Each structure stands twice: as structure tokens, then as C-alpha cells.
Image (tube, rainbow, N blue to C red):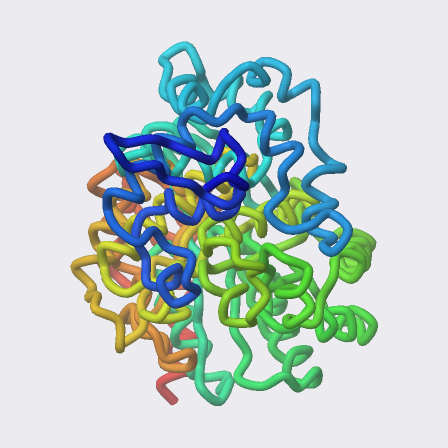
Length: 468
């Protein structure tokens, strides 16, 4: 224990607990999850976890500006976090410990404006640290107060709104299958965040074909939304060069340079893609052109976590996202599997933590409320997480036919799940999209998410084509 800095030590009864450094303390304080056990960084007992949380609560926030969890010299994400830190925004928080920070966030005196003003003064590690001290209800209360609004052809993140990504994936990219799923989603009022397809292959020709298909649908029916084909950023750049109608640039990102390298990206490449998309000027009410997905365990699965717990690594990915002012960011919370989030309880907790950290850092945060079929979770767990995120002010969720993505092979949320959340919580879709739904006679009353019981005339020909 002699080599352990005093601030990372705690005496409980006759036992002195020591944590080697900041990343060890953060890992030990993290709520239990299978990924941290797999990495060998989790607390050895519930008592050690509580002691770590007590030690963390007494730690000054200024420590996070000097003690980094991944070396500055070795990692461009760390350099981004430190170099982009806004000292003026941090000034009102500078005197606080992590525990004091929790109390400040929960205070009635701290509103949406105060949180927005502080966002760029908060580092991802600060956000991760304070989340480890919070109950689920704390994460919900603070996330609810965070308001992050972005726009392209629709406005995402307004108070009282819950948007959806319409996800019409097909295992062979069959046009009729995609069209059927797309129509189904639109008739449920889904798609105001984005109509986004995960392509079955990395073929640039296929990506271009899908982009033209989505672009034609959006233009023909004047839908106030944006399209995205979720392919690698280099494929999207090639599609732009080929003249494809690219609205949003998608990329999976992670919280360390090494993990991002495993994805074949770095910050410079993301900047190049953002510039290319901005040059097209396709947005009608805004120019937020990036769409990022993240997920706890991605750095660990690439052996690129540097001994950092997976939730702190996840929060660091949000620094990457924040740099590029995205329209959408979502954690694909249970997608990687039970090796990282074992069961429904861990998935629910992770989803709330991720949403809280993203919103606190100023991101338009959504969540793919999901699990793999070999996880100890089911759709009831997803109903719980969906409802909690709806209460917490989540920007958007996924809309998948039947909640079963037959191309990616995992379970998510269905079109009717979004309808449920909007109805029971009194939420609406993006205002531009809601106006379009009324024009197309898909919704017919002033009540949120009240659908017409008849097939709208504009889509009857589409149904005939698909059926034929």
C-alpha cells in the first residue's frame, strides 16, 4: 500500500483499501458487469466496490485533468479530451469533489441551461465517475434535465419528443423486403430520427444503390427525415465521390485510439468525412451530418481498453462524438453480448449510465434497447429500459419490424414499442415529421401517436407493388 497515492486509499474498520491509480479506482467503483470481470479490473467484492465509491466520492474533480486513464502521449482520444477541455465552463465546478458534483447535478437550482453551460467543462471520466455514485433514479433525473437539440431535415431532442430510427434491414438487401419494412415503419409513425439501413455487404455499389433508393422515397413523398446507410466511413466517402445522395455519415466509434484503429478510423478521417458531407448541404433546417454508434465492451473486445473499465471507455467515446457535432449518437447497449453485459439488470443499468453520460457531455443521445439471444435477458427487460429511457428524455430509439433484426441477428425495439412509449408518456415525434404524418393521413387526431385505422391513400399503390 505504500506506493498508493493517499487520495486512492480508504480505511474501513481495520482494513486499508488501496487502488493503484485513477483507472483502478474507477473500475472498482463501477457497478458489477461481466465485461469488467472478464478484463480482470472489477472489484473483488461488494465491500471493495462500496469502499471504491466512497473513495471516489471524496476525489476532487481537478484530479481528472491531471491523472489520465490512458497516457496523453499514446492516445489521440486522451489528447482530444485534455486539449478541448473548456476551463471557463469548468470554473463553477472546479472546487467540487465527485460526490459534491453528484449533489450539484441533482440540485433543483441546476436546470437545463446550467447543464448546457457546463457540458464542455466536463470530461468523460468525470461523467463516468459521478455516474458510478448514482442510483438509477439519479441517472434519470439528471438526464431528463439535459436538453440537446440537433437538426437536419427534422429536429431531434426537443422536450416532450421521442424520435425513432426506422431500421428496415434485410439479410440480402432485397428492395421489396426493405420497402415492406420501410412502409410498415412509416405507418406506425417511425423514422423521424433517420431511415437507416445496415447493408448486408460492404459493396460500394450496393451502398450507392441503397442510398439512391432511400433518397428517392424521401423525395417522392417529401418526408422530413434523413437517410443513412450504416457502412464504413470510407465507403460513404466513396459513395459521395460517386454522386450518391448522402445525408448522414455513419461510423462506429470507441473510447481509445487503439480501439478506433481496429475500426479502421482515426479523428482525421472522421473530420474528412464530416467536411465531405457538409459540402453537399443537403439539410433543410440544420447541418448536423454525423451519426455515431457506440457500445460498452467494444474496446475490450479489441484488446484496446488499456485496463480501463468498459463504462469509462464508453464515456470516452462520447468525446470523439462530441468533436463532430453529430445529429445522432446511440449506444447499442446489449449488442456485443453477455460477455460484456451479462443479463437484463446489467443491460438496464448500462443503458441508463450511457444515456446519462452522453447527455451530460452535450450529445443528442439515443439508445438501441437491445440484447443478443444468448444473453440472460428478454423483451420484458427491454420494456423496462425503454420506459425508463422515455422518462429520462432519451432522444431516439430503434424501430425494427417485430423487434427482431433478421439481418444482424439480435433483438431490439419494434415500431409498436415506440408507439407504446409515446402514448403512455405523452411524447411526440419530431414536429416536422408529425406535420407530415397528418398531411399523409397516417395520424388523424391531436392526441400523440393516434394512428389512422385505414391505409392512407398515398400508400395504396406501394402496397400493391410490394404484394405483386
